[in-house]
Length: 491
Image 1 (cartoon, rainbow, N blue to C red):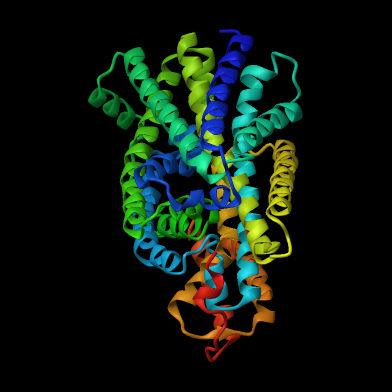
Image 2 (image 1 turned 90 degrees about the vertical axis):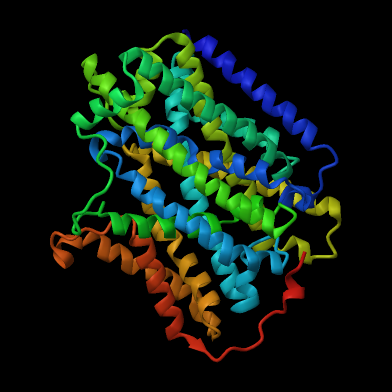
């Protein structure tokens, strides 16, 4: 199928998103942009969050990693389930009790203004780096598959996609995203299931025959029992739990949708429903990865990693499957990018600019500032995507996990200290501690062989970073004093 035809399918898909945005964005206010009027249905949020949690990186990189890592990624997914339970039972009750719009206000109630803004700043940094890495991967595939043949440069492709995202999130915010994410998750999962069924048909294999073929090639290995390996199952499960606790429970983008649900009980049901569905979806992605490598071997195709799925879908399968792949891919792209820009806008406006605490600013002025910030983050996203293009890393899932380890660790330490202890801190030292902890982790990470020999630290670096931050906060702790009452942070 020609690039022009694929391009028109993409435009048609985007037109549907605009229609949804127009309908849900009517009579939109700052409250609906930031928190969806606290009236989102929990099941709708749970289903839509699948797309946000997975992103285009999961869609491409998880199947691509099967050749090297087998099904060991599922060990992290088991940790995810534990993490979702912790978020539902520990963090969400605090957020609902305080009626928060920005979850980082929780840090203000316990530790003070500096800790609150430090936490928000690390979220802004982490989500910007992580979301643009996810965006880069999908844009790069779309560039190779469609836009390159239309002689459109990479930077313009990225700009067009960001303009698309701006158009359908500019007004409605979370109120719109809850619905568009649900639509996009349906498209993504439908595309995944169709690709699995078609690959089984192409290989003339039943489900169990396909598993046997994968096992013969070593793809189905799931549990790693080697303690020194970075894929050791205990390390992976612990890492997965902390990744979810931080990247979901301490992440404004993910929690912004959760706390848009009216009742705590419904929000908790959302979390645990998401946890169960995620395990099944990740297994299906891994199974698809095995199928792709079995198919690639049968046609003597040497593509591996992030390039495998796009190469097979767009060059070796019928045009209809190519269209399904592209629609499913952009369905994975948009939820991770639109939610990130919206959450970053919300966090910057509330946590850094504090526009909700400025009664001298009219509603119109606040909306103008919010829209300006929203547009500014789109420009920042463009610059970072171009930076990743220049770096040209072969596996973006490794990049994203590394970014999370360094930037979410301080958030883990801050929230952990606020939840576990009853002490306050010398606030002026909080930013220093939160910078020193990832710096120390970097030294350890880059000198692993000299420090530990054959023992390898993997994704659990995030937990280590959080521990260093926690210890640093203990070192600057002092007896608890009143910081801010809960009523002062209600919005």
